[in-house]
Image (spheres, rainbow, N blue to C red):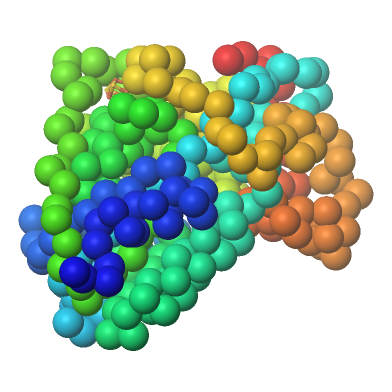
Length: 314
Ligand code: SF4
Ligand code: SF4
């Protein structure tokens, strides 16, 4: 009887707090990397230069973990039943950033899972990632059956909608594999129609140069004036293309984790960033995904919204 099976991993992962678990063979992602290269050649990554790195590893996970046989994809539901209030003089925060930084939680969960599996069989080896690292987490989530990559670029699960964080574990063990998730967007174009900056250029392809999420988080420069009047009150990130998705309306379920409940509300006052020093900002948002935008970025976003003078609307 093998010491590590699908069931053993699924049981332990559930115990640790993962909501979705799927298994895929560690095949080469040749087609997906060609699409990624095309996207990069068109400069759709904007300032995210890290997307250009490690393409060989993204294509072939055995360059990350020699002897890789399988990729296990995990999902954690982060939906909480709160909404934006559209307060005057406040800016909206993307749902994923309302609670504590998911990276800390998921890194710990993955570490505990790896330690447990190594304790069962010392020949088990794994390399795990949450966002960072040269892995195509959404592609693996689809291949492992967690959900399909929707036209808005998010992985949509039929258990939780797209309000899920993903993690990926590359391993040297073989397992029984899930079937890839079938794309169920059908003829729907709700996300494409709703995007206020026309950032969804074709199915699943986002032009980061136009995406409010990029412009308010990863972007290190100014927000181009062409987006004046189009931000709909978003201060950090943007959920419009997920909020309109019919699968989210149907499948969103409240998470059991208090970790993701709003720490400081679902919106923040625009004025608070004016006087906040870098040190105060770092201390205040130490445990929040909002720290990614840095004090300078949040000041810029708040200033942009103030000048934009558009009443926030859902
Ligand atoms: S996050 Fe917002 S700006 Fe970006 S593609 Fe979705 S709706 Fe458009
Ligand atoms: S809004 Fe429609 S097209 Fe967009 S991801 Fe959801 S189901 Fe797919």
